[in-house]
Image (cartoon, rainbow, N blue to C red):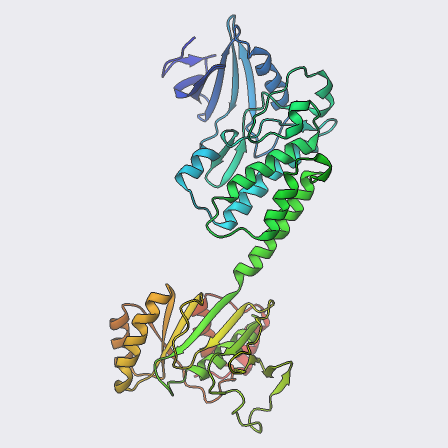
Length: 450
């Protein structure tokens, strides 16, 4: 029987609209008149061939409690119809989601992948008998914000009940090849998950890592003997990839560029690396020009140590420029890599999270600064202008020219000295905080203030 808006079912469910119609029946959006919350009502005539499937789905859903699976609240019936009262899932299918957002980030890919795997981990570890879903496809995965729900359990079955199934359903694109032979186990679902994730991976806006490709190839192996054995294995592999991605993504590359020779760009680069290391962030300096500033420092004033090419002094760690054909390899443990280009422009094929343009007070150098700033604004969306000991009128002119805030670098004779002013400046520029509460005590007691 067709329902119309404002109809009341069972004295408490007010029909709002139609959510969908298929060969099995119709799904309506309703509102519980007492609880004032929305419910989805699946209405199936008893004359349809899907009646047994409906009862089967209800029996499965009644015992499932997982945030990724819609709740079954109740089942009602009258002389001609069954009514499944379910949680209303507001969202769109994965298929529709990818039509609206054809490109997703690798982080989104990993989050959605792990959510899907966690649902199947729950199903496959149910006691006394695991549940096989058997009909996974994008239409059955609903994206709600950035959370996913798995719907349509009318084909799913308990693992212990496989021997009693005479007809197998599924789908040609995402179902395991052994489905056609009637030889199913938990690995059949793993194959389907792998196929879904392979499809999802084609929408990631950067090349997927080789590790993820290997993981998905193993999940979708044609031969079950060569396939991942459990969803736990898939989750473990994807979580490790997420950790690796997070570590890589959290590393920052910063370029230091001077408007002209003698503006103090190397002094500020040394100060930045020293201050970051002092604040608890592993940072490395990379000299990108042949001026050899590091090696020219007075060894009596700055008694530096060199280990495997790296020069260290107090909180500073860095590599000098070794000349053409020799480059220092990036330290994988470094959270900040600071590249000092002197008064040269960085190459266009290098990507940086931020570029610091260092300017000075001399009016005769403003033209150079304006010219370089315009080029750098096209290279990076995060250009930071720092005036080295400049007067207010100079900072005002730079701010007006670049249409952004300009920062003042405080005077400090030693580039390796740690001051509260430097800490406050770099904390603001990079939006970081000191990692040890001991800092607040030491700052007040030992660090000179301007």
